[in-house]
Image (cartoon, rainbow, N blue to C red; front, side, top):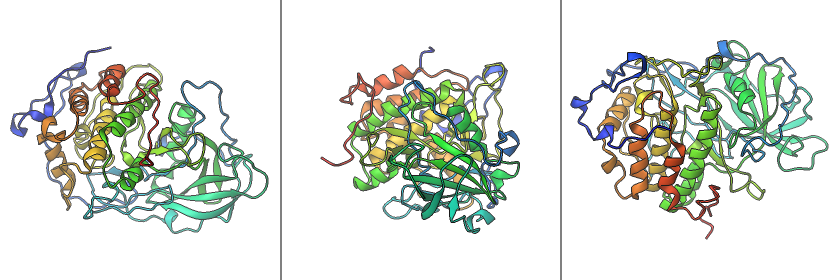
Length: 436
């Protein structure tokens, strides 16, 4: 495993930034992107349907393998905002929350309690077309569609109650499930089922990734049948007075790094790591204190599925994918996503949970992405992590100095936080969520 380097890129002045060496003699341009006059783009986001795996109408349910690594029978509700893309850097918009909370956060409101600045397009047909009253896809049970859990530019999530039978709280036999609807005319479904389906086909059973029990098309909608999960880390942060203790954040860090490690081993990067995309298990269930990572619509391969080699480096400054508040600098600059980007976004997530605010919050206007990127590049780890324990600064320095194709030393990254957790040996997250 490569040794993580010390010294932080962000401690340099913006004018002195030099492109780091890249594989295959490809240089990363560290110049702050030009301030484009941006416009909202309809349905920007998951429109990678050309690569989507074909899923026939009435697809059969996914089967759960046994002994899937450290996956503990993941329970899922797609609690978070739909994936987003800016071309070029359109800034906006609405956030989607799926654990009985709908968040709209185009602006940083007074207490910074809003969900992050997620870029999203104008409202599409799928968000206005009524969903069916009953759902059955493939060999799934029949579900009655009940209350809405959330909506966004790309999909809607409802509670589905089994019409007959069912005895469990989670799993394929659950009485209540989460039903995620995406309209066939939405941007992400131009070429068939949403790209997210393909990712779930590969990652179902991966540690910390929620299970999808059934999927298929009914009428005008592509539908995922998933478990209902509990609150997101953003909700927990809100419930704790918009601040988490360093000990709690350290526990989250250990488990989140473990989840990302398993995801990366499968050859994917998540592409949208943030508090809203980490969920706890369903309250009152055996999994209520487990952590899950959801929303795979922006996931991409860092490793070629055929050759097993790292994907090539590329840069498209006019394209941004992710959530502005937590995105890596590389994402702002339009660089091909790799493992370092997930970890950098995790660093910002952890610092936000402790401090309740990041230095670049509050920017508005068409050039918001440019201003946020410039601020990220100009803020040193020392300033970023003031009032945070040393491990958080060490983690930020380590991940922001990684090369494009560098393999993270996950064990070393976890070791930064182990002295701050009470469960270092088990590497299992158990925290009290403010219950005493």
